Amino acid sequence: MATAGTDVQPGVSESSTTGHLGPDSRRRHLRRELGRAWKYRELYLLLLPAILFFVIFRYIPMGGLVMGFQNYSPVRGFLGSPWVGFQHFETLFALPKFLEVFRNTVIISLYKLFIGFPVPIIFALLLNEVRHLLFKRAIQTVTYFPHFLSWVVYGGIMVLFIGPGGAVPEGLEAIGLKMPALLVNPKYFRTILVITNIMKEFGWAAIVYLAAIASIDPSIYEAAMVDGANRLQQARYITLPGLRGIMGIVFILSMGNILEAGFEQVFVMYNPAVYAVGDILDTYIYRIGLVDGRFSLATAVGLFRSVIAAIMIVMTNYILKRADQPTLW
Amino acid sequence: MSAHIETTDYEEQPLRARWHSNRLAETIIYSVLLLLGIISMLPIWHTLNASLSSPEKVAQAVLLLWPHSFTLDSYLFIFKGEALIRSFGVTVFITVVGTALNLLVTSAAAYPLSRRDLPGRQFIMLFIMVTFVFSAGIVPGFMLVRSLGLINSLWAMIWPTLVNVFFLILLRNFFENLPDAVIESARMDGSSEMRILFQIVIPMSLPAIATMGLFYAVSHWNEFFRGIFYIYDPAKWPLQVLLRSVVIQANLNEIGFSNQDMYGNAQVSQLTIRAATVIAAIVPMALLYPFVQRFFVQGIVLGAEKG
Image (spheres, rainbow over the protein chains, first blue to last red):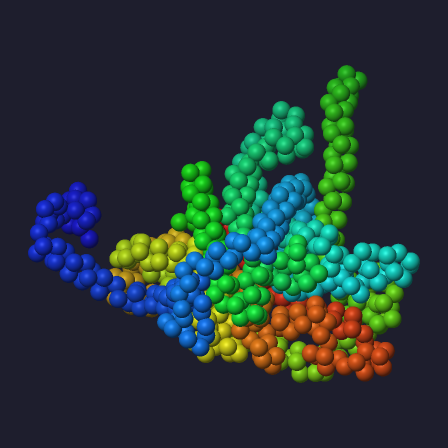
């Protein structure tokens, strides 16, 4: 809207003074800012429902974290319950059960990360070699589908398949073979978690790699073909290095989610027989908090979990920023 | 003439060798992929066939590759009672109403945040991102829902998931990349921001909003934890909570399967009932899936563009 023919940069006019601002001009500045904001009132109105949502459902519960520093009793409420400082945290760190649950969480996450990480990459590399489009689409369709099922459904199918009284053990018994009870045996439980998680998610997880492969410059492949590189060599020396960036991002993001060992999966598949190896922070918080009603102790565990998770996310973002990759903020 | 043929032979030799090794590689690649596809579908396929077979056949077979003694009795049985239909009703309600509210509030918030000139934009984004990084956790969330009087209310599964931060940022990025000219000219004409949003911005972004809607809908359909945390009245259980009880914990009385049925009924067994229940919960997702699939690649690309 600047006058035609002037070279003045937008926002810089002759009347705008910088430097020494007196209290008077500061007040004027504030009034001008408010006046400017008033012009945007309709936009703020559009934002209002979302802001209210974040205040009520995300910020107000943060106030509830005071329970972790109280002996909270629902009868007395937040204001009437006695303060105990860090007592619950001291209890926690001395509690063998808490240490066990924390260790289980990290171990299950790391297993899933390290064993599950290469599967979608290999899958994407194989899929990339397929020239038969109908076949490619069919494989994508069936491998992506389980991602959209809930863990209740997928875990339920697994229980019906390999669980006690399920198809595979019953059928094997009918022909005289005995299969160990996989879901109630601490020896196999984590393995089952890792394998079923890979089975459910590898197809979906390959999408980012397929997108990255699609963005590799085709002329590099043409040049390699002219030089006589076969398809294995092309995959090894062009496609795989082309995926390095996205592999790093996926790996770091997974590291940032190290405390997410898969609440819903564990919740539907575990049972008291495997608590020693399968109980994770989230299931533990749920049981002591909402089932046993030990609100203060459960809040303390939850706060510990949230603080570590927040540190991990901030670190993740920092690492991605340093590596010049897209970041969360 | 003969010299010419010789050179052709000479040139074709390595080509044919390459073709042979390619054929071997191709066979291996196709086989591995086929195997992965089978692994993905086999447990689901088996369960589908178990739900359509007679109980004694299910008890005998290790793996059902097709229905044995085809029957729909298990489905007739599970839909005879009210429990499953009622839970379907609950889940359809939270999916339809929840997704509609999600889309309305997320789009309404994404538009102002996409305006680079909005005073305080940075601050509001920070205010939102904080909730992405740090959450109060399960117990304080439960306390809030309880003090709002939402225990045993279907709204306890709708309000706490009203806006997904990740989707909000993706949609804001999408709006930022819309061509400015159209919006600018509407503003010059004196259109209100509300009109610009609903008559220009949203119609221009329908594929992105549809993608987001599908993802929101899938998450409502799969809603489980809020049902476990907040709904204690079995008459208001969402589908996934009923499924856990019936399929995983084998509480078949939840859907009207009594001990008498267990011993006196040859048409269904607890295995076929559980299989039919889980398949019934998949069918709507399977019907929605082709639409999800058409859109999600765009959604992912949308997400990869900017973070």
